[in-house]
Image (cartoon, rainbow, N blue to C red):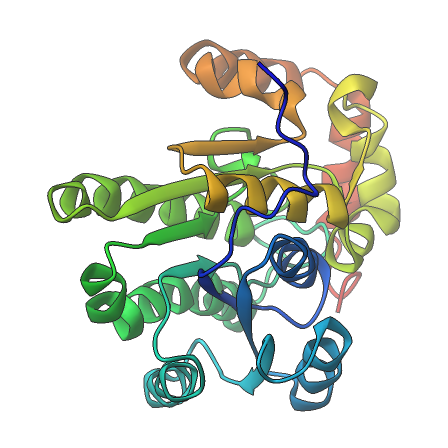
Length: 287
């Protein structure tokens, strides 16, 4: 059977809403979806960036850029209402908006920073689903929740981010089971080393470099945000339960019960990681 190519038009008639859509993975997902014939609505807190991003993808019949704060439910409700007004509805929501931080120990992470990451990444995901649930259920549509390999890999020195993404995974699994009888698909996407501005900042400081030197090369080779976006467009076109990018992490997801204790043990004995902990534990280093 002939392999399906990305260029084939397989999303005609679909309307996809993407939070955090102004840049990075969100924008590249929108680009791939438009290429396949979908209409897209980009939601982002940055008004200038989201307007510019939507204009790059096409006219307002194809791409809409809207300001929305995932931590503000009325803001989300208004944005989704605008999507419905412009496009007559939507069937797919990519729950992508998120933030991170540099390498810090839990002790060196300000309480406000921890809570802010949880608020955006977890509560923002829940807010997004809640604001769009009636429409997606009515359309028998789809949710794609962006988690991370840190949902099952050790999240040391990134505990707020890892905690939030593990919770997003749990939210996605719950939604998948609850919405299956209503014919709504739920995909959980696990991303690792994707070349985005956020990931670059995490690994750029001295603690990140020291920690990174301890990670096996085959696990940390980055992929582009465009590759991640194409992967998300794939699961919108052909829904499945999980997406893992880069694919080399699939085995670790399947073997998480073994990999988790093994990686915990290995980190405790790794000199590079121990040095990274010392660097990341210095007050003010990453402010």
